[in-house]
Image 1 (cartoon, rainbow, N blue to C red):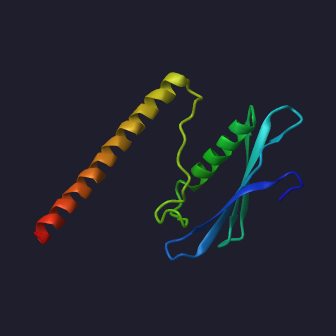
Image 2: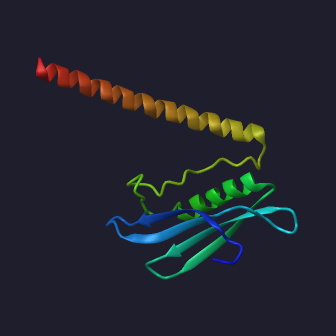
Image 3: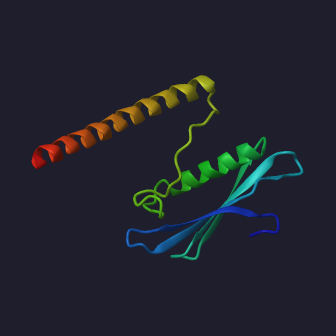
Length: 139
């Protein structure tokens, strides 16, 4: 940690056997002399001892934080790690960039929301069918 890093969040990630393999840290946003903001994402790999550090910049503190979280998701996307809150995920959701304009962003959000609605309906139907089957078995 440099003298300017203040960690506001930390997560331990485990492998399929439950062994801690990675510590992820997110730093509080700080304003640089240039006026831009930066939030640091740090990755401490316990298996190799390697440390990675990525600076996530933004026009303000919120953008730096959001970019820091997006950075964490991108780095971890290809790793099969889990955390206590989700056995099959590192728990960092993908974000949709506004870099290509509001229209592009809104189209992607609508597609994601439609898929989420379809998946929720599948879960509701499966729960209903299970309740019906349980009721019929008890009758």
